[in-house]
Image 1 (cartoon, rainbow, N blue to C red):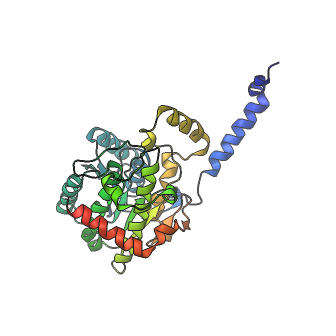
Image 2: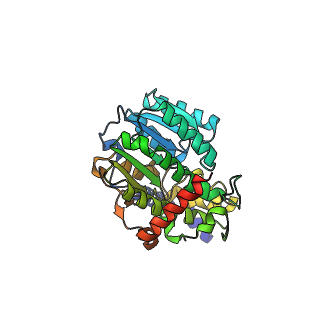
Image 3: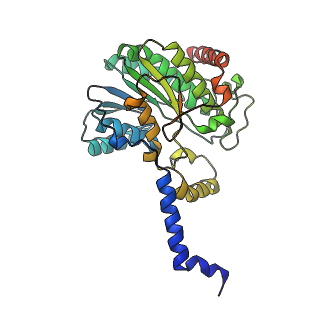
Length: 321
């Protein structure tokens, strides 16, 4: 008998299966979107990166609640596939695709212009699109690709749509950040790809910290307007965000993730909670964990002086593009 035979023993197989089942149950939070009866009939929502992963399930939830949903996607083919799937599953024909590349400020401005011309109201904006693990890439506008995609593009989009959201109040802005922000740093030269270390999720972590900092400052500026702004951690989720990592890292992530990480549908819950739940009505400038609980972000994310500076620098950088 070899020691490896233990792995084929029925007791080992059963206990492993039981452990996997228990772990998967633990991934679910206390708030269940299916138990939330809030309807979004007559409301308009935009979800960036809605063709796959978390974004697609957020958009599907909104569509099932009767909202007019705009899928803001970079790929037309993948966006159309998501649109057809969401319309079919929700039974809601009022789901539409609009193309935008959030890494391009020019594309963001064009998208926002179309929205302002075509839409009479905007009640929910979910900044979900993001990338991680990219090698050094500088956009034609002189920005680091990861920073442009994860922070500066969504920052500009949000600000361009603010007046429409104010006129549609009450309305909500939800920005998908990450617990990884705690490993992030603030260096404004990063915006242009300077002084950055391109290794694994290092740049991603920086962008997620900026997400929270600027969301908190935005919330301060929006007080009294009826527009709220919050950031969320979706959890460690099995999405395509790992597609730029080495194959072996992706393999390990997927094997471990099968047991311990959230599915895209589970990862969408905290964003949906902030966007529609009655419990979050009027709450602004907060950071929500993946179990839908309000938690304190990293100290840097709570530095109000830094928030003002960060917001103003982002305004200057994006206004020139």
